[in-house]
Image (tube, rainbow, N blue to C red):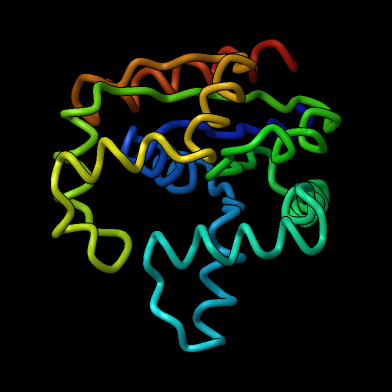
Length: 187
């Protein structure tokens, strides 16, 4: 079997993290996240890892070094990954998939859920500083920024679309079904 690469795209708190964790745990997959590069930079600079700071540093890097600067790094890391199943998380822009789509057995997976459910999940998980204090109105407004609009365009290119308005167990069942399907196709 060749390497299978799943790239996840989806709105904030849609369930991408749950899917990634499952694949890491079950298949020993290594995940490559666009935000890990940004979080590492903020850490090293001793700057709070807020959503706004993550977006700002991403914008600065992309403006100075090209919209595809982070994508080149991720695609290179993924191509060097020796795992049979590899995960890319945090795809948001069309430039993010430009290089990944050239890799054999890359599948873009769009996970989506209703805004109200995503907002509840966001409050429950608190991945970034201050997320537990955001109002629903602020959450809705944050979905209107340019990055989120481009995310919709990228989602339309997905090879696999997964509705995650159910339980985490239902999401995992769907993920497992797709993984097994892709493994069968490669055998």
